[in-house]
Image 1 (cartoon, rainbow, N blue to C red):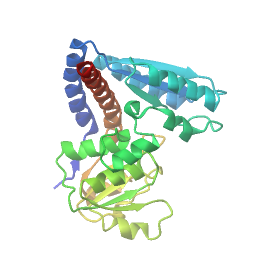
Image 2 (cartoon, rainbow, N blue to C red):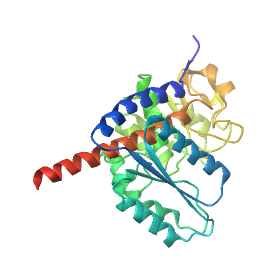
Image 3 (cartoon, rainbow, N blue to C red):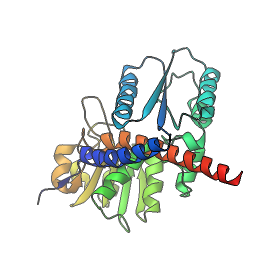
Length: 288
């Protein structure tokens, strides 16, 4: 039997279809969800990502605000912009496009974003709240991985998931999220010894190491699920698709796998943030 190809475009569209109904309902109550994106510098790939997010917002009937800052922007100047957006009640989600220029304290900038507007799940507080299941918005790529798993009803409970990658916005949060779904989780990285032997024990492999075609088919246990969160130049994932495909029971392609779902999760979080703000406003009005 051929492996199941996990079609991220189909999953993303299902999310967007649900969002359109929610957005219409919010608009009927006088609220239009709004995402603010901040881009520091002139990175062309980042410009493209920001434009893609704005285009998707508009297609769904959401608003977007794009803030472009010059390369020489200081950390304090960036913090001032984030503080302004934090206090703007028309803005429901804030995204600081990564990477920022090297002279900026990126972690300080991320952590300046108000938790209720951290729709990209990049704050330290948000990571902790996600780990303890306290209702924060998780990082969007880990959220996309879980969305794909849920859409295709893939079994996680009791399964051994091996995560290859330990970044604060992908490997670490997805590990905690899978652990919270009762998977048994092993976190590996590019310096893990005998990595191929560890991967061979996995029921679920999450490739998130940032190296093209890093995960080889011969590493896999027969019938494992491969979730490729990598995106390298030339539309190449972190898993070697050609060799991994015949060994897997289900696999995400690159492109067309986790990537499209990631953007849809960003917008989903923004819509949820708008709904939460509306509910909070109603509660305060009722109390007063």
